[in-house]
Amino acid sequence: MELYQELTRDVRFIEGLKSCMNCGICTAICPAAEFYDYDPRIIAAIVQSKDEERIEELLKGDTIWYCGECMSCTTRCPRGNTPGLIIMALRSLSQELGYFTESEKGRQQLAIKRVIGENIVYRGYCVLPENLVPELHPEQGPVGLWIYENRDEVYERVGANYQGDGEGALRKIPQEAMDEIYRIFEVTGGFGRFDKIEHFSKIKAESMGFTEDGDDYSDYVKYINTNNNGKHTRQ
Amino acid sequence: MYREGKIQVWQDYQKEIADNHYFYVRSCIRQNFFPGSEQTFLKIVRTELGKDIVENPHHTTCSGIGYHADIVPFDTIQTIVARQFALMTEAGYHNLAISCITSFGIYNEIIETWKEFPSELEKVRNCLKRATGREFEVPLNVAHAGDIIYKFRENIAARKKFSLINQHTGKPLKIVEHIGCHYSKMFPSKGVGGAEFPYVLAGMIESWGGEVIDYPERRHCCGFGFRQYLVMSNRGYSVSNSRKKFESMEPYKPDAIVSNCPGCPMFMDRWQYVIEEMEGKTYGENGQGIPVLTYEELAGLVLGYNPWDMGMQMHQTNVEPLLDKMGIHYDPDLKYAGKDGKLIGKPMMTGCGC
Image 1 (cartoon, rainbow over the protein chains, first blue to last red):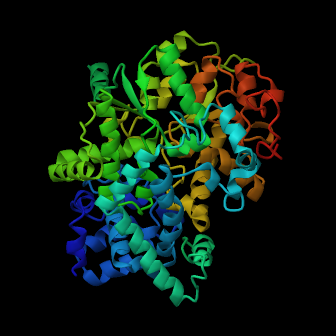
Image 2: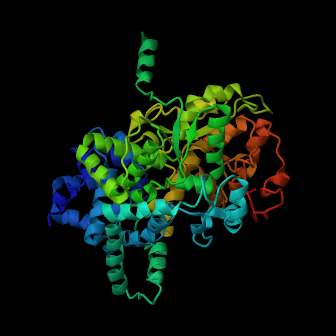
Image 3: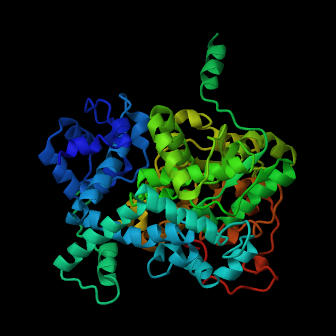
C-alpha cells in the first residue's frame, strides 16, 4: 500500500495540504508546539515530500497525537494549508492500519473509544455526568465532586431534564433516535473504526503482558489512560 | 475617506444572523457543565426577545468530540450532522442555532466540504437515506447561539436591571473575552469580526457597560485539545495553555472572564483551582480566582436573573466577587439549595485559594 496515495483519498488531506513553503508560522501559533516536542511545519514537509518511509514513521510515532486540533494553524498559514487537517487524515490512516498501537500516545485511542465512542452510540452524547468519576477527574475539584454525588438534585435545580423524557438538557435520547445513530455507524464505517481500535489494541495489550481476564482489558485501558513516559514535552 | 475605508473593511467581517425562527441544537459539554446557560438562552430568546425557537428531543450529539479525538470517521459525523438537518427540515425550519462551538465549527466544515466536494454531499445523502430513510436540506442560516445574543445585545441592554459597572467605583468592569477556537479560526467569514477581530463577545460587553481587556494571549487556545484533556496523562497540555493565558491577563486585573465556548469556561474555571492547588497561585483580587462566565450567564445577570437559577453554583471559582461589584443581591444560603429550597449538601470547598 502506498501511504501517500491512501492519504489523498481523504478530502481533509486534499483540503489541508495545498503547497507548503515551510515558513513555520503554523508552529509559531501552535499551542501543542509550545508544550510538546512538536512541529507541524515538519509534519507538512514530510507528507509533502511523499517519502513513504518517513510517513510510516509518522503513523507509528507519538508526534501525530500531540496536536490539539484547535486549528489555530489554518488562520495563519499564508498558503491556505491546515496542518490540523493533515493530522486528522494521518490519525485516521494510523488507526486503519493498526499503527497507532506502536506509540504511547497512539495507544490512548482505545481509552477514548471506550468512553466517548460508546457514549455516542449508546446514549447519544459525547460526555455524560456519570463519566466524571472523581478519581479520574480530580481537576473538577470539590464543586465537581458535589455535583457528581448529588447530580439528580443539582441538575433538577438548574433546569436540566437529566435522564428524563421530552426536551431539555441531558434528556434521555429516545430509543428510535438511538437506533438511527446505530445504523449510521453501521452504514458509514463508524463501527469499522471502533472494531479496528479494539482489534489492534487487544493484540498490543497481549504483547505487553495484559490479559483479557473477563474484564475486557480494563487494566490495559487504565494503563494507557494514566501512563506517561515523560519524554513528550519540550525539554 | 479613511473612516469610510475602515467601515468598508469592517463590513467584510460581518455575518448574516437570522432574525427569527430558530432550530436549536444543544451542546454535550454545556449540558453537563452549564445546563442552566442553555435554559437561560432559551428564556432570553423566547421571553425577552419574543422570538420563535424550537428543539427536538430526538436530536443527538453531533459526535464532534469523538471526531476531533479521531475515533469517529468523517463519513459518520457528516451523516449524523445530516440527520440533525433532516430533523430541522422536517420541522419546517431553515435557521440553525447551535449551542456548541465545536459543533458550530463542524457544521461549517461539513457545509463547506459539500460545496467544495459535491460528491461528499451525495454520499452523505445516500448514507442517511439508507440508515434512517430521512432526507434533508442544508440550513439557509447557521448561527452560533452567541451570535443571536450579539445580534440582539442592544435589546437586552434596553431591558437591563444591572450594568457591567463597578458599583463601588463607578467605572466599567474590565472583562476578558475568550472566543472558542472553532468559532472563527477555521472559517473566519462565519464569525462576527472574523478570526482577526472577533467582536461577538466584545460587542455584548461594550453594550452592557463593560470594558474589554486586550492582552497578549487573548487569542490563545484554552488548551482543551480534545484528546489532550480526555486522556488523564495528557492533561498537562490543557492546564499549561490555560495558565499561559492567566499569566498574560493577570496584569490587567480582570473582573471576570466570559466565553462563548462550551469547554473553555469550564477549563478556565477548574484550572484556576488546580493551579492554586499545585502552585499556590491565584489570579484574582484578594487571593481569589477570576470569575469565569458563559455569555448567557453574563446576559442573565444584566437582565436581573437569579445566579443560582442559572447554575452559577456549579462553578468552582466563586462568582460572588463579580456579583458584589455589579450590585446584585443574592442569598448565599440558597446557593446550594435544591429545587425545593432544601440544602443539597455543600461542596467541601469552593473558590480557589480563598
